[in-house]
Image (cartoon, rainbow, N blue to C red; front, side, top):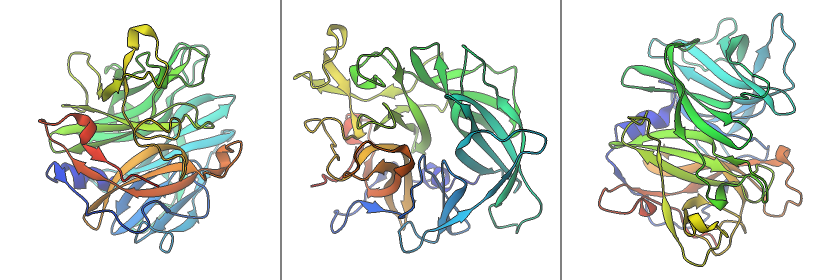
Length: 360
């Protein structure tokens, strides 16, 4: 499968630790902005796709190696969408390439589409030209606006993981089984993997009813499936990164991935009475300086995190704004890389599973 991080972590023991962090910790991967990064390694080369018509490619995940290369999207017989969000290539075990992406039709009306490669390309290369084929998950006025999607395979089954609104109050992360990369299994129900649970930190905007979990990236580590996800408003400081976990890619008996909760005895998040005392543990956040893993002096609104292994060491790759930005223009979200320690143990609270360096 194309997603190199999946293969690495699926075959690696659960105890993975990076060396003591020193030198420059947070690295900006390119001077060109790219939002919604999706990171994988293919035939020794790193690729970062996102919300734009180019990808970063290079032998190493650093600014000296990565180059921005455009790719072509064709829409025969169809009016091109206003934007393309999160273009995600995928390679099956038979070597065939496929891709999914979000078509933004305007005013946050979205649908998920399938793309096939255009023309011929070297057998060991990721295609650089793609053709729209058909819509997998349509937009339905007043009912659904699906977005941010990826293929995930487990135990012989292929799933489409994506974000889906639930009325006007919540955005969930869901999965649906596929017959093949171009066809949804219509007999398989949409299953919720993660949903907002009424914690104040999950509000997309203060004073409004909408709560949101989005930007899923799932990695198996040992016997545990970990989903990295984002919360908040992508154009505000409250956009942040969390993780949840499950014993199965698709939780059994209608369950969902478990969030990591910690004490909030000072009520930092100003939670409602029914939620007072507990809040979500965020892996990267720029909202509250007195909450764990505050990185607001180095990067703002960190989200869409990918856990990757480079040279035997684990890193998070994510997008975020320069800390000096005012107004947070979504077109100016950059890719960043940060070392992380990974040590999953059933004996320890999940809060300790991932450790990011304290950034001064």
